[in-house]
Length: 347
Image (cartoon, rainbow, N blue to C red; front, side, top):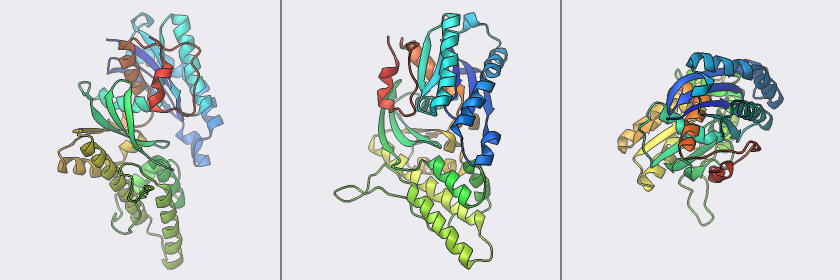
């Protein structure tokens, strides 16, 4: 069983983990939320500088927590795509340097593949094929998983990702950043049936709608119009009801498409990854839909929903066992499809 030290710096968390197969020995995460809160979102330059300040301490803390020596580590991994280029460069440069100095193999890992492997951290015996729903601030997609590196995207958002929609609607409601947790908390006290909002279906050229693709830009606009209408007609904005109605609409749309994709593909398991996987509305809606159709639904623990290096290390361990290695001149990419994973490795 390979022991991997991995670094994750794709956005606004500096994380270092050591994982043996899918057993987490350490997982250090330094969040930047407070640094970005005044700006209402992630500022790339601020994120890169913070990674530079945090990375050495995070590496030292992960090694100390795991209580292992460098001789016990088989390879060094880092997220190389997709993400903020400056942030990715900090993690990959640190990982390549460690690999060179410690004479270890290096593996570049796709960030979304890490989210797929987050479920293995709690269920190591998870067997493909299964459907993975990736829902985060930058990505919303449905991926059929046949094995390590063997992925087919069945559906995706055509505009805003689910996490982006949460942040933008939270801003409209004056809830601050990050928007997802704020809306989730407020929705607990609101009425999800208070307002009817559009799911954002994608039309096909010859009629009908795409069964798996989604759109959240129109939903965001609908909420904006609703808020303006309520502000003009009501003495006080029913913020909790708007938040609950919005969250219900997103959860319903995501669950409907995931269940349809699983049934059409004859898959009996759906795993969920990404920051929005922590949303209680989505967890409840998808779990109920899965039980109705006898589909197993797997959510990672909250600590593995947001960006973390443990999931990157778990994915790297699978590639390492297949004999995959990455060259030390591997670059980083702000965008990269899961179908291009073969460009990251040599054998």
